[in-house]
Image (cartoon, rainbow, N blue to C red):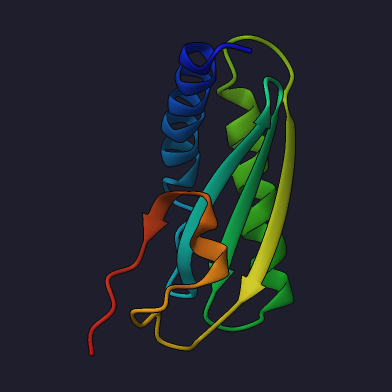
Amino acid sequence: MPRQVDLEFENFQVLCAVQALAGAITESVRAVTINCRASRSVDVTFVLYREDPEMREEILEDFVVDFEALQAFGAIEVITTVVIDDQPIGEGGKPWLDGRVVFLRKELG
């Protein structure tokens, strides 16, 4: 796939992710990133401050349903990953910031 098409697809997925995140962000969500792996596949990583299985399932379920509903060109494969990390980002960065950042909570200190 040509790079221009890749970029258009990725930009569209960012817009869909931002809209799907409305109402899904809680105090535990630290960041959300996406990686477009193919024309019909998107990896979404949620970074949480702490593990909460009930909240985790609710956030993922709500996000995926809304994200898939926003797809204008048919079905898409959405692969979600959850990372638990409460340590400061620091200057070295974090491996989970590897994708395109869709949401990043402002951290003080």
